[in-house]
Length: 162
Image 1 (cartoon, rainbow, N blue to C red):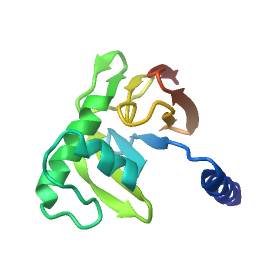
Image 2 (image 1 turned 180 degrees about the vertical axis):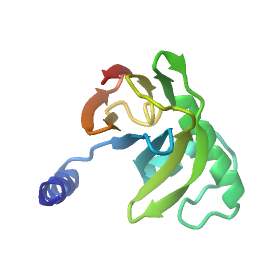
Image 3 (image 1 turned 90 degrees about the vertical axis):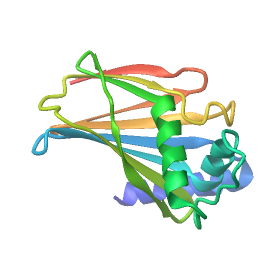
Image 4 (image 1 turned 30 degrees about the vertical axis):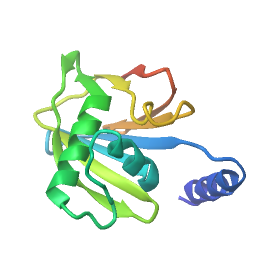
């Protein structure tokens, strides 16, 4: 835990000197519920600017004028930019919601009826339309195994096997 905090502090210091563009996608296979839970963390400003490209309506992630409209924008964007295949089958995930935590927006999704996760094919272009230097860090947990991968624009695909 301390290691993670030190990494975030160092990242924060580096960002003052040189801006960076990163999102974090956490994918957790919940065997008890037989679901795949997906959390996507994006800097609030980056998310607002990216979503703004797709609508004429002014967006404010922190104080939305129309929360239902913002929910739809987030759901549509992530669903287009993050595509998954679970055990070789295309996955359709449901939008659960989002929350703002300090400088970041967490959005949540779920894939039902996944009793076993052996292979996850990922195609992720989140924020590639916002910044050429975008990186997406993906953490996947299944059972007691954790795997991570970093995708740097334009690279968008990886496969994780358990």
